[in-house]
Image (cartoon, protein in one colour):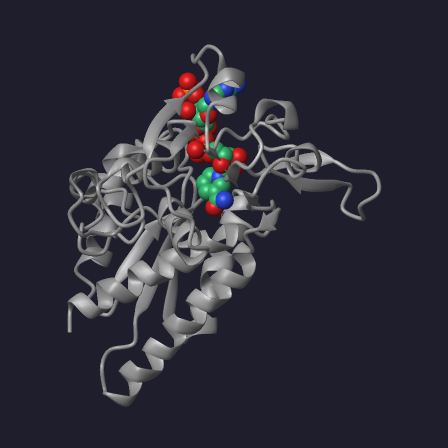
Length: 291
Ligand code: NAP
């Protein structure tokens, strides 16, 4: 069994980005600038935004945080986004999700300039992604592809099961892995909560990409020997032995599946760290497109 070390690979990616920033500085080119829009005081959202800002500092990017009270109205938020769209100093920005229930998420994401949409969620970029046209790929699927490529895992003609069909993970990764690209050419099946015979689908698969968010759902007896598991799920479960009183686990029951897999991404330390690295890579790309 080989552990796909997302933490180590994400550091490699961040170091490459840092080297590109140094190169830009030497050549008097603009320093990439990533901004984040945060609405309300949701704890996990604040933590995610802080990690993104920390990663910007690490690679030498500029960063900005636009923080708004949860009472902000949808049209006021749209106004703020339009101001960021025309701010030439900012190359890319993200709107941290989820937004308060009163605000229509789709309306907001549609307002982000496609040129600054480093999350790849704008319909124009999402459409380009589906068509196989070069664009900003959503960060988590992009991170999965980067892991697969850097570990020299060839998916050509492999049976690949994606469990989950969310707009941010399951749907885009299923589209990407079926494309005729160097990282793709897999035979992809997408499963979701209405799928029957999930165990049978898993047993037939060479590669399983799981993004459902149910702790330790995939057990060793559900997978075939020599398969690969890319575990996107992140769940908190009670753990009295930990100081915090909880631990983070993935969708796969690591203990039982690790006895059968060839490759596996651990949780934490697998797909998670790659997501931020790929967001920064998209920001570097957005900045370079303006050179
Ligand atoms: P989501 O929007 O809640 O989607 C979950 C998907 O799982 C849905 O398509 C759902 O099916 C499917 N599902 C739920 N129960 C199932 C079951 N019993 N069998 C088969 N499919 C089932 O979640 P998400 O945003 O994609 O996130 C999924 C997980 O990945 C979460 O744990 C999240 O925290 C984690 N995540 C990690 C990263 C990272 O950087 N590592 C990034 C994003 C998300 P239906 O469509 O039928 O409801």
